[in-house]
Image 1 (spheres, rainbow, N blue to C red):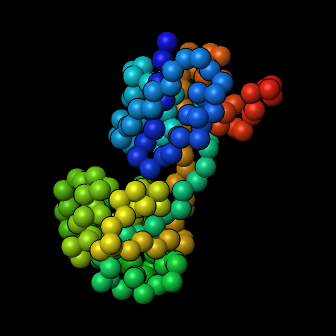
Image 2: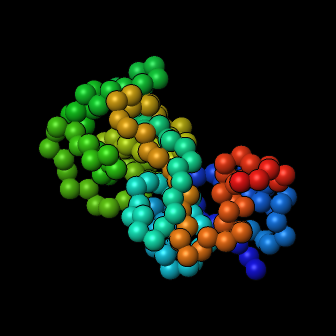
Length: 191
């Protein structure tokens, strides 16, 4: 039976997938998920486990933290943040138009336009036109990197946490094997 692992945009499950294929006879299918669907995909049984952006509702779910992602601001190459070396502070962005809501809840002080909902890719295209800035995890900014945009770490925003979730009722040998892989256990080590 195929083991289905969901993963959100920007997550890179490849090294864990290779380790799975070395250890288990069951095929592993990688299933791309949106952040909006990450939790429901697990709850509805569309995937056995998922690499997600936290927080999630942990009711009936196991959850382990895997790593953190740095927040970045993405802007047009002509924007003033392009002159910044590596980092900017949120105070430097206070007068900017934020083209999509940020998970931390931070909003610039300037009156915000009523932007339509958009994907991260759409947000990068929008800021490339010079009409605002977007905040997102670094992995997503790198995924949608273009020559006409820049990204800088936002030094005083909290990082995004990435975790692994699965149903408490779906806690079998295969899920524990995958947890072990993400924890760095070798095929010969025990829990």
